[in-house]
Image (tube, rainbow, N blue to C red; front, top):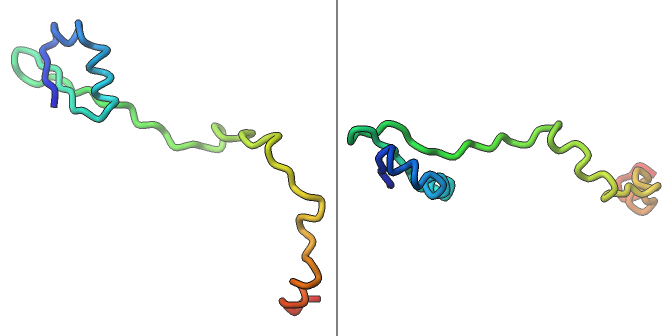
Length: 79
């Protein structure tokens, strides 16, 4: 855990942010008492809006994709 006064934190803000991103608990104090804690912003899980089109041009579906081969159909008893 890192504790630092506000005035000192101003001078080392970038380093404190990196420490928080690396998982370190960072507390900024005011008059010797904890005032705020730096924590990383949680990343939102991917949504349809953020992943739509990601595979465009990378995936090809074969023309016979939904055709069942005869030997498999025979084994399943549906031929």
